[in-house]
Figure (cartoon, rainbow over the protein chains, first blue to last red):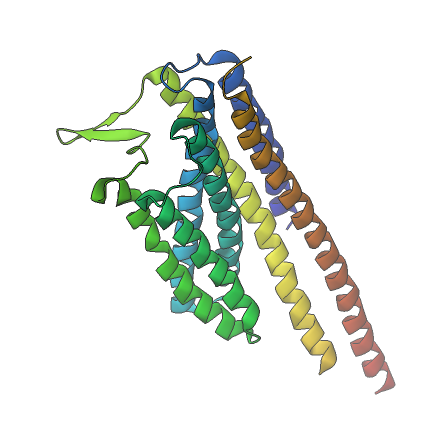
Length: 232
Length: 55
């Protein structure tokens, strides 16, 4: 318990300071990109947020399967915590993407395949929480949410491939492109390295939020259990 | 002035404010729940000790 508290504290300060350092690197050291100009800096926020969203919902997918298989409450608590953090990141992906879109495409929103499937992901996980709120039995809630969590995750490969499957306004893969069967970086190293660093730092920040949220979830379940005991 | 500075400020500002609020709310919820759990655990253990004493 004490070691978990310490880990959360280290992750909190470590990731916040690293995010700050990445911000300083992006704004003070990096050159302004020639084609998009200053708004290209939004990429260092938007792309890592996208990758973190994917990871958060992948964790939901893995722990939902684990819950359905083992029926251990801990797995559902982790899935729920990750879904909430993922939902916040997903909302920020939509918002920062819309702002970046306004500067590059001249509009905040288009019903483009990438944007629409991302909005769908957000709505699926909003539904995930509505479903949890509408069921009183804890086991039933976990079972139904696990099924929806697994189905919801299946939207992510569609989002990722949407720029290849349909003609979209959204740019193709930002990090790497496949050229004659080989994955190559789609940008020069001076832009790629800060992007990779921002992504790693944001993943550490996600881990901090996940652990913090998981602690809350554990306590909430314990509280409900105690309340049920005192009522008996 | 840099072209598009307002958009960059808006994007970074919204991201930052969202997480500041989210962390504050989550920490507050964790604190409240922890206090409630401790209080209830004490009450439950107190009740069981009293019932054992009366037996």
